Image (cartoon, rainbow, N blue to C red; front, side, top):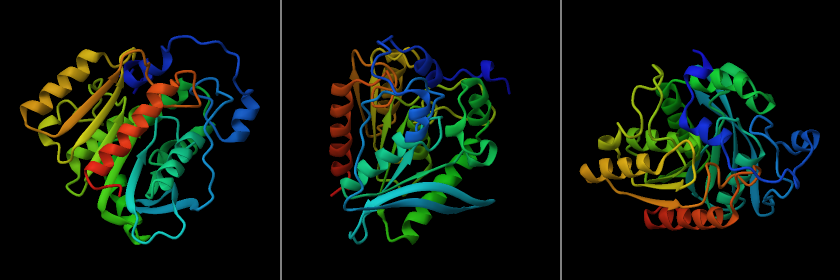
Length: 295
């Protein structure tokens, strides 16, 4: 499958971000040392770093149908039966930004776990520096396998004492699409939050239905957080998704940040927009509290 034939809207948004000054970015070697991906471009020096005090963090080993899937988890150190929040990553693998998001969620009281569901094909995607090398790997991930991997992650979290009766999912870029897909799949999910997740897919036999096509099947309320300046996901697509969900009387809300590009929450990238990111994080918390994921 040629990557150039599979230019998903998240990739367009990633590669066509309004330009910023290159000042204030880490050197490539410093970014790698700090655990960030280079495939997304230069890494900002002023990244958010969530401390681990009061948390238990570490590597997860999640049993899946064909072996063991790696992951990363964070949870409050002494909490019994914490709610479970799945963290669906971008296309760049399980790098430091995604790990930090799990720690931020753990600070809110959750057992947050980010499964590395691209592990089968490409090894450690965070080490890949060329988007052209990365895209065939992530575009070949079948939705059926992805959803099975997420179900396995939920089972792992339950085995670790997580309260899967309070199950949420959060995702960014391609992971935002994953939120919509999982909300149409899982009857156990209480709520989802999709950060700029693509709503219409390019033709790909591994992805039978796009989020918009799955609108009638949504089983959990989803909050969609989108950028009005996202070059890959036009506001018209967001409005179409909103209408499709409303037609089938599905519970969903959307917030569009007018001047924000794709990736506005990604504090390690030039696309980061502090005001939009902080408001969106607050909206996420309110949504999860409203639907019983967070206390």
